[in-house]
Image (cartoon, rainbow, N blue to C red):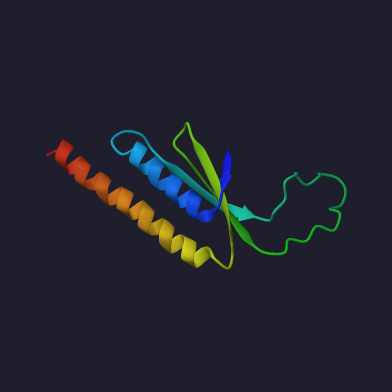
Length: 103
């Protein structure tokens, strides 16, 4: 899995959608990310780990290539608006292709 900056992630997401335009799927997942790189032990205490900022981890895959990015809570709105435009442009192109293939 490749961790990218926000702009690079959107560029690669556009490429994934173009690659899977006629056949294939792109899966996008989103989850809360607190910055930990190691799991929490089941027994015992957490050694004073305090997340400084709420973040979102976004992942996208077409089954072969995986990309991901981390977005802070301050830039979520800007990133989401850009992501929606990328997804919508890929989706609207897909609708016209389906209409041509299935008259």
